[in-house]
Length: 456
Image (cartoon, rainbow, N blue to C red; front, side, top):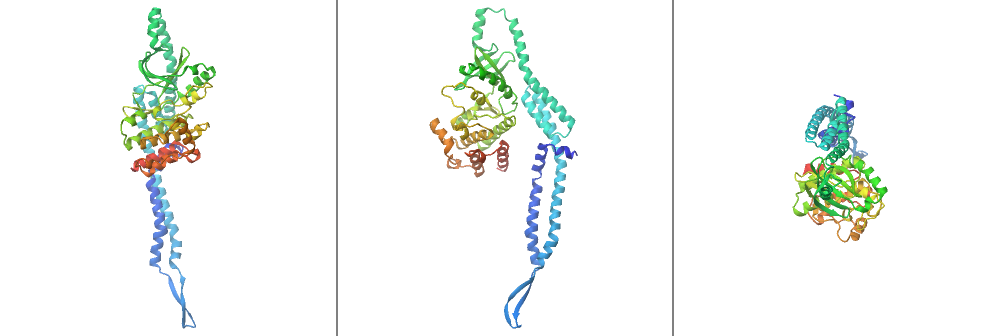
């Protein structure tokens, strides 16, 4: 067993410590039993010697305990009991360490098999995600190197795919250049960048129109967000937008909508991304009653996507039910990750827009301060509050809601619906006005939710 290798693997250590919970319980029970049980037994077996105190051998002035024999016996033997309990726990942990390494190898192999399946289905994002899990649990350094090389190759494939597609499209355009001008102008009316054919409008908001389109090169459906024309006119912002979009394209996680491309056509910027055949979370919970198990399942999927993005140092800044999509197979996808930051970096003022949604905005964002991971945690907690209670924490005009986000404590969820105390505690901690009093990392909430959900 490669002990030193195991201690270099946080995922395996976490698995080992989780499996060792019975050993911790044994040690705690043993310490309590020795401290209180052994003492009680010895007090019964070795009662104290009591002598009467008299003056001149006649007058009784009381009794005095001269010797507590049990205490001497306890002080002599209890250290051996403690050492034995610790030794048993240590041996138990060592045995678990070996079985944990075998479990880790199984998880690694299983993750590789899932990656193979995902790659065969051309789902490179899922394949990369599974390969990272495989590397995290593998104890074979050579295998880890091979996995990392494969991950790098898949990432390179994702980043170079667009270049190859553009090249193929140029060739295709050259071949079809002999079409008449009249027909070309008629055909391109419904096209974006001469490649994406609009099918239908999916939605429209302050930040632009979202289209369902057909990628005529890859022959697949995509979602395209058409950003306001004011943005494209800001040259400095355009450069920043394209630069930061490269970072967003690195987000490859099953619970995050994949960014494919940023294109410009006729002075309009388009945000091309994965099309999710499903419905937004706000429409879903309003049209159908979600069970507590379903709500917690959705919550954990959102958290895992956010945790991954935070590890990549990308903050959402505008997390809300409208930006969370649920596929027909109940897979949750977070959309517009980082778009709020990109749009917020523009010097252009877009009439009627606020960088963030008042009902889900953290107090620091409402005050115009910089958002960080804890701001996303606040927004997530607002979403969870709404899913559990069926109503937002704060209502009113945008101005009123922003004021409440800054000053007013949210009504306790239990005042609106019957929920477990532990769930209310998680929600209210995530909604602390002082970000220092909230959960500091997404992983902390995942641990809390998972623990209580397993118990429930």
